[in-house]
Image (cartoon, rainbow, N blue to C red; front, side, top):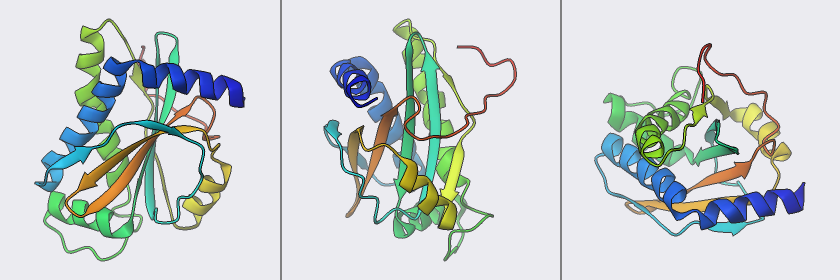
Length: 183
């Protein structure tokens, strides 16, 4: 799996158009919901599994046109609550069943921004329903993740976070798609 993973991720990171669309759409989405500039750094390959600061994660799978990748958006508690409270004008102090789905919604909204740009380039992707993890479920999920990934660093004010792109199957998740959704 490692050489296949490294090859796929290397090809993806070399595909500047697709990376630019993913990075730009995520930055635009998060900026629009936080009211703060979100600045993306340069994507890079990494093989570290340190997710120590992640308190909640949203995951989606994009597939189509011979490419399948899995996006992992991991947020610290502080950053998640800042985004959530800004989006919904709330005063949430904890991550729980009632608010954790916001991490997946960010990915859904970002895919909605990515999709027309992909289609302009002739790529037709479909996205899975988001998977959400926090608490003990997050700890178990992080133990299963393969280390090879494209990491995209982002800065939101003084806070930073990574979005990671994994090869298909790296997250060990059973993905579900909306009925009738075709790539």
